[in-house]
Image 1: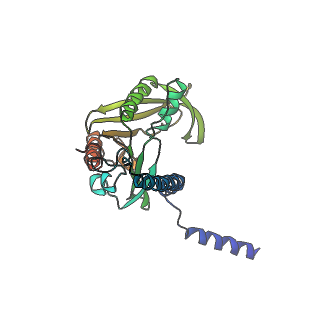
Image 2: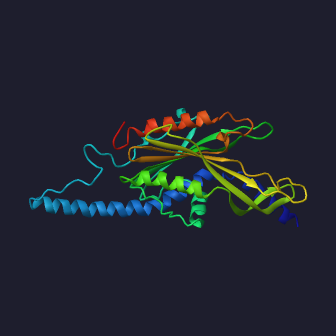
Image 3: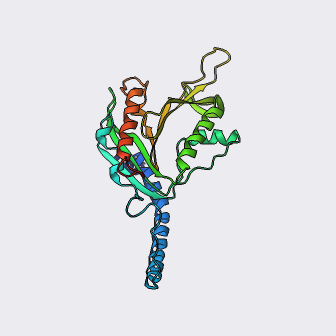
Length: 293
């Protein structure tokens, strides 16, 4: 029996020394693995294209450069086009980033699900190039040990002409169709998790405040009331904000994580600061957009 206890004690000690990856690290690793195949395939295509171009060139026929490359056009998205820790009104000390090809533009997966249920077309725009990053920071709460978590996530997509306009038009239609959309969900209550109906509401809280196009998309949720008391059966999830900004052929989606949520006690992230963050992002996009600023 004592041997069993010793084994358990050793196991518990070893587990305390394990470094568990942050959620953002897990998401970044997953995205990186899914994109390696696309990058490898693109490299193979480029290699074949290069060989073909050389062969054609030797025959005396010039080969035009692909659209968006060469003089006057930018293709890949440089790191300089992304937000820096200095742009964010919260302390960050680490950047987790990745790049991709042929990525679908993701704004709000729940809104997309609602739009599908309403019968709206939900074919996501596919980007030519993309770059993503998550800015990490340390959160300190009185009475608790400091812990690491994402501060803000950013995706930047390069789209073909017209795709960005369609993206914003689709968002407008989805927001209009998804007012008061109910969905069965599990929420936390004093006695544990309970099944209830969560009513989703999306609003465009602000628009045309940065770049060529911009919206602040706010997602709020309410929980059904208890028939006996008239009170919500549980505390509703916190509101979520997303900033969508276009500069030229680039679109960026900014998702502030919990430390930046407006309305949360102890937070200083107001709507004005959210809009300032979007303007900073638009300024960064200028170095990589077609046309530039």
